[in-house]
Image (tube, rainbow, N blue to C red; front, side, top):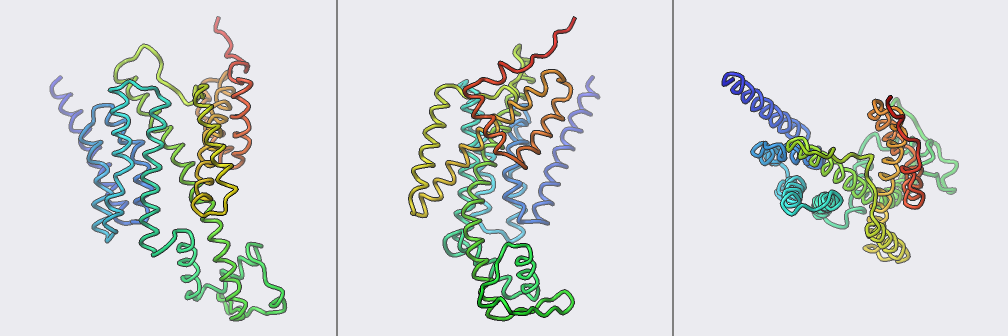
Amino acid sequence: MDVTATSGTWKKALWQGVAFAALWVCTYLFPPLAPFLSFLLPLIVCPAFEKGLIWFALSLPIAPMTAYLLGGGDWAMVLLLPVCPYLCLLVLSQARRRRIGLHAEIAGCFAAFVLGGLGMLARLGMLLGGALFPQLSDTIVTTLQHSVLGGGILYRLVTLGVLAVPDAYANSAAIQLGNLVVLDPGLQRELLNMLRLRLTESFAQWIPTILMQGAVIFGMWTALTTARAHARKNAAALPPPSFRQLSLTRSEQGYMLVLCLIALLAGFSEDSFLSVLSTLTYAAFAAVYQLLGAAVTVDLLSRRHPNRSVLYGVLTALVYLVVPFALFLLGVADQFIHLRSTGPQKPEEE
């Protein structure tokens, strides 16, 4: 028994070391991946902490920090990398002590992801020297302007319909030399200005949306996986919470209505801050109901074939990526019709 226990301890320590080293090497070789890896860490760190792997959970966020720093990363970004996993750890550890509900844990993890993401975006804007979205577009356009492949990329964007040739340059010709495309200097300048505007508008719309969507999704899965680890560790009599059971209480529906009103009212303003606030709040509002629609879909499909729930989850994830509005409508409808209570039930066993 002692030999078996010692062997298990060594294997556990070995795999923890391998995970730490793999994360460190990946961050060191690909420094731009550091922020994305920091957002994935709570999915590993929080369940590990709940299982009693305290030192592993506390030390793992240090791997991307040190690797990013040795790779020449910014000091402020280095300090922001562990914010999200450590905040999620703090939220969930306090939730266990105070015995708050699963939805409160999800909200706390969501806030941790939002704070970490906003901090990194704010620091990125400071490094670029101005407002984030215009500076990002200026950086891309400047890089394209000084690249020998710039003309070819602009030509490809025009053929794809992303950019339109101004009427004044409708008769301009492009000269192709192998993989290089030489454009009229005036036309190239107009296309670059057009691309700068398109990129600024796209960044202002998609970056806040991706941030809030990711915060809702990762916050939910972090809380769910940690709750399931807690239930298994303590051999709880009740089954662990599942994604299929997610729903909103009456008070939470009221909060979502307030969030929707904030998004609508802020959207009428031309102020840049209120515009970003409208995008953030609407993205969070939409993400919640899309996930609720996904939960309804997986639950209804799994009623007759529970063994295929993983397959249905993968298919629903694809629907989330391709036509999220369909899941949004389903999530909204579930608040009034309660689809999961009226759907087909699992056949009883004889």
